[in-house]
Length: 489
Figure 1 (tube, rainbow, N blue to C red):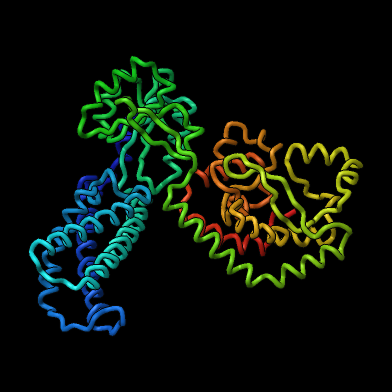
Figure 2: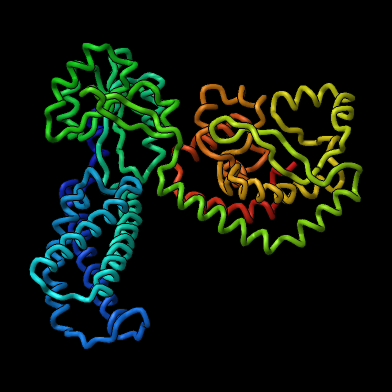
């Protein structure tokens, strides 16, 4: 079997419905779920407005049949609005949090249209019911979309709802893009391989086959039923890019996407803006959008405030123990880099002797190890109590106050001091697009047993693939990782 036929066989296994059928089933399920959500929203709004004696509502005798008729009329209107807001468009589904924003916008516009129609027709509907219907519709439709996403993501891991993708250009950026798409299994991208003039067909680059040259791209796309082509523009000449665009730009079945040649710095995402009718790409300043930032902030402050209330006596006991164990302050301030490259003092319980530099100077071999790894497994500077605090990460409790100051997050990449920035090289700019975390991928993956290179890879994976559910997963897995004490020194 040739590499082209092999790639094609991966697109749709035997017995699996066609991609169009799979997508139609998903969209039909979304429509059905939205209808159920609208009916439930109307019913529960009716119960809250008319059957519960809530003081803010005026007591009236409602007509159940009237509100049934209103609901029947509203369902097609809402479904039309959802269609206009691309909530049934395959190209806009299962992406980011923008889908939930579209739900809010569509429901709000629907209520505005309904209010105007009621004024014109002079039909009377209880305002309380209308407001509750609006709120419950947003909530229930959002829940339906959330549930359907989980189902779709599970299906994608099993090979369904996937999109065949080709990467044109097997250079470093093309490899980085392909690896990222393959790691993000919920993206639905089925990367078949590369197209490149500099590598012979059949050879592998980044564990993916090269299917042919740029001149053979139309044939490769047809044979593999490709729907997405991603151009690594740095690997192509301007003439090649124009030729590919001339061939596939007008296509209604193939989506052509261009990498801007700056994959290393685009973890924050990008946006296209027309300025004087010239489309220009702008890089976002931060990694998360406003909705994700709000969710992460709520999680950080909510859990931090609750945690501080519970562990306040423990913090006091540890502070006293540190003072009694060795001379020096209870709190150590470590100068580190925050989001945007600004420096701040990260608080920790002191775990080292105050004359640590003098102690380390007596061990040249340890100085070399520290310079290479950034950590010492047997560090003579660490106090007796410090070893216990480090083993169970108790020394990091004071960083909860850094969270309240807006400098850190519960979950994020590992904090680094300014001198460590050199270890991250070109990835440093990515690291500084999010707040450092008390815990993170490195914490649940072996802590200090993880090599520095692996730690950087884990940090980059988190930054590129962040979701609020990733944060919750890491928080839950941090507890057994810390209690086990593995990799802590």
